[in-house]
Length: 306
Image 1 (cartoon, one colour):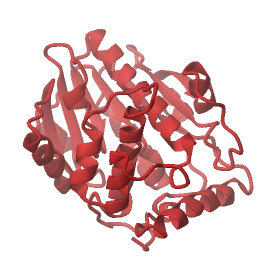
Image 2 (cartoon, rainbow, N blue to C red):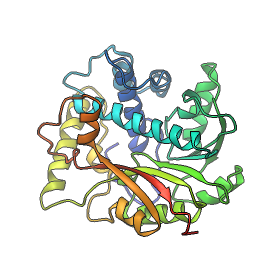
Image 3 (spheres, helix red, strand yellow):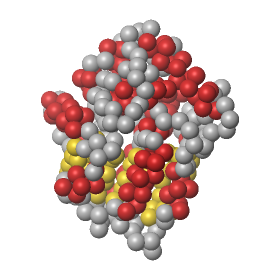
Image 4 (cartoon, rainbow, N blue to C red):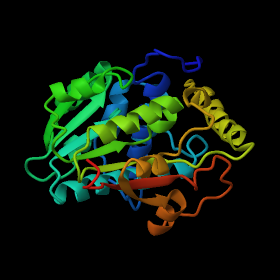
């Protein structure tokens, strides 16, 4: 896991970008066990265990306490992030949208754990080995989807709209889209293409949810890399090297929120600081990694744009 990202690189759920999905699931498992849980993801722990990364498994099961390995901000972030997207999807589908697309679905278990309205179709888009692993593992646990779950097994760098259509997706129907924890792992031009494609495939009244990080001030990204390297160093001492700073694409890029607004989306945004406060979580301290300024945004495609 020591290599930097490059065009055409590959991974599984125990390596590179795939391991970030497993680490996120481990954080959800810890958050689910919290004294005052904001989320309930009963599948996070068994999915992490099935991936088989020893340290992440021991964190997810509670065998190893997160103290000293996972800062509380990451657990709290898992709480508010998961709750934000859960509520986004349920609000959209309860308002009558019957078509959902989860991009880079990883170990996301919403198709199995949310109470979807009858008739909801949930499309999961991710690499073939990722969606196959999750499908097989959850079936082995006896879990059944709570919606009509359909898989588009394709890399987002390939022709994923064709795979989505082949799975039954209908661009003439309003869709609820999520790009959760994804954009920072895409080069700037790939991020723009993804957001353009979402817009092109969206009927009027569609909804979208994602994160929008402000562009960095001088020195900001060095601090972010240092923070990620500190986490990786602690984990490397326990036999797992996530190489977090090497997995992201840094540098200037279009901020997602204004980019989407320019393409006809009406968005609302809430900062992580505000989400922490709204959920009675401790405020951020020593925010060297600029977490507090990130916006979680969601909104609707203007009915007059398409």
